[in-house]
Image 1 (cartoon, rainbow, N blue to C red):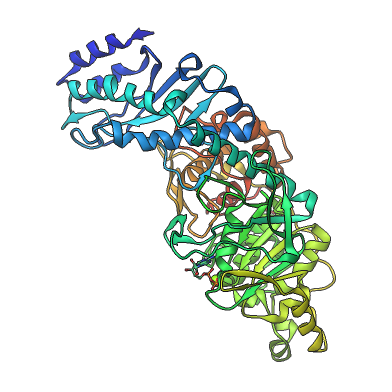
Image 2: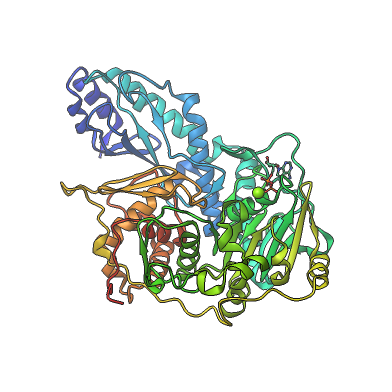
Length: 573
Ligand code: ADP
Ligand code: MG
């Protein structure tokens, strides 16, 4: 390893040279307090920036062990440090210094969630952070002096301010770490209390705007649990906390328009992740296996067994193995449910705002007019109880428009000017008073779902030239030559998860055999998740990337299910 003074000398030498000379920076450089590893050097100032890794030994960084001794604590501390880096970059670096990305430092984008990411890794030995850096140039000529300022002045200052425990506010660090650990512990208590979700008293659910995930600052009504649904759970750090427990079974959220129904459901959907202190939803937790279900017309579907919901299509299509390049509202919603169940969903979150009406209800008058043999759809209302009784899958459903669901609900919560009320008894009374129950459709049993075996060779993560290509945005994933539409999947918390899904799918395509499963969708995803937990995302990557965040298996499967080149192995079935 060369010393940092040798790096300075090298930068003087290549000053004014063609951009390619930056390649000589690759390798390890010893600074007084840390090691700089230049993992990747960009090809030109406009290409995606160079990747630096800094490694600060714990003798210098000095993080107390108790801050990272358990997995939730470590993940929260790493999250804190990523945020710290992002906060300090504009404060101790100059920014633009030439063409393209010249002069810019950056770290991964993040939102309100505490997620396992590849950007920062903390161990007993060291803190390691991956930072992007636009090596400076004028046109394509190296600006050696500017690079010197960046790497030998700004970078050490950034490391000192963001990655040394002594530079941080110990109270803020502790709060962050404890918050993540407490949320994790709350989620862990849901099952034993027979709950699918918990919303703490005082939680702030509404967001600043339709395009911001930050809390609404003015006029937000804090969450107040109804007495009958109130439970108290334990937090290892902050002690007991009271809130509303949403029980297993079928829960209906009703109420007038604009009374906060969808806001509550969105908070539950995000409750599968932990949130930073101050988010307002720190102590809103949902079972990890909760999946948002919506209609998604136009989506691709590959051999999904949607027969519990759809049978006897007019064109004679076999709905035990339903394939289409262009699903309708109802068939897409059916496929979304079945595919979530296939990989282990235990809670379905459904909002009338984003559902296909004919998938959700078929009222008495419509039953009278359009006979069952002319309607391929068995509506969700006739399956929702079977899902719980036969498969143990709970549903939380926002439904302000149809009281038919009163009959099938275990719990009915009414949102009234953003305040929840337990109206279960009232709703049941109303349903009984109307006399005869709804004529049920679709038979006594939900039935079984035919498992699918994806043909991993139909995932093509490489371009025609053989280059691995993974590009993500919040709404789409580009894999090789194909783009997967993710715009209607709302449980991706940040773009790093999308990119990670891309690498996981690429890994499945090229190494999926190693998982040694029977290669059904379910067992592939379970094996993938287990390996993720044991070895981390790094085990699936071709190099050390700093811009990835761990996804859930539901999002991995959802992306795969939407890949239009996907084929099944036993297509004959
Ligand atoms: P619904 O689904 O019942 O029609 P929404 O959940 O979409 O209603 O909420 C309507 C509006 O009220 C949104 O702008 C939302 O941000 C706001 N809102 C939701 N909950 C609260 C709350 N607790 N305090 C203040 N505003 C809220
Ligand atoms: Mg709504």
